[in-house]
Length: 287
Image 1 (cartoon, rainbow, N blue to C red):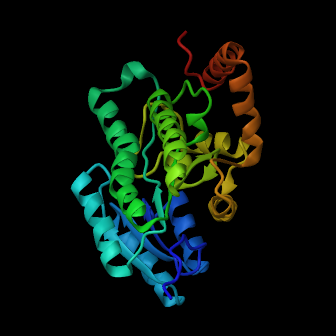
Image 2: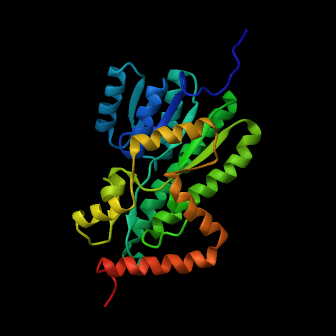
Image 3: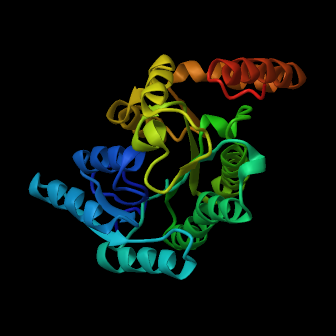
């Protein structure tokens, strides 16, 4: 008798994780591997991805590293095809890749806007477009898109980033409502501040137009109590296993989301005041 086809949580499952070689992606990848999931680390940083995959294999897990630019749609489809051919299934698609650009919008080039849209929005679209039809054919699957708390609240210091992350939330919620009718799960991760290279310095592929010292940046980071990435990954995967729609960690960030939903006009006024105060403290407010 043929075994029922259903998603595996997580032992024996297969997962693709974009940007799986650093930060949140790496933490999720390593935690999935510990739980018995075969992982595919899809990342532009191939050498680093292969190093992490080798470590997982040495520990008895199953891991494959592939070089991927998420803005390249044919390459994304190839990664999904190769994974299906090799493993026979795709339980999880973690569309996690993203970049960060902050500072005054007047300083942005049009290339900055295009770059962040290509990675943070089109990268997610490409992952969904490649994985969703496969999951429909096999009758199961879970798409997990990484947004940010900036996709749920106001973020005046990071306008382009917040724009893309709001788009990811909208895509994920609407797709969940549609896909759930067909047996496919969709969740969106909305991390607060997590201790990652992106939080510390914008990451390898990010950009900052805010001229402050690394020491001051570090001090600001510590004030918002960043959660270690490994703890974040454990909490996230517990929530994904429960098929949560919107996953916010650390949980204390939820109160900002609730305030933004309940009092949208007041949230704008209050955020503006705090943003101005922060700029003055940093010496970035025009004199």
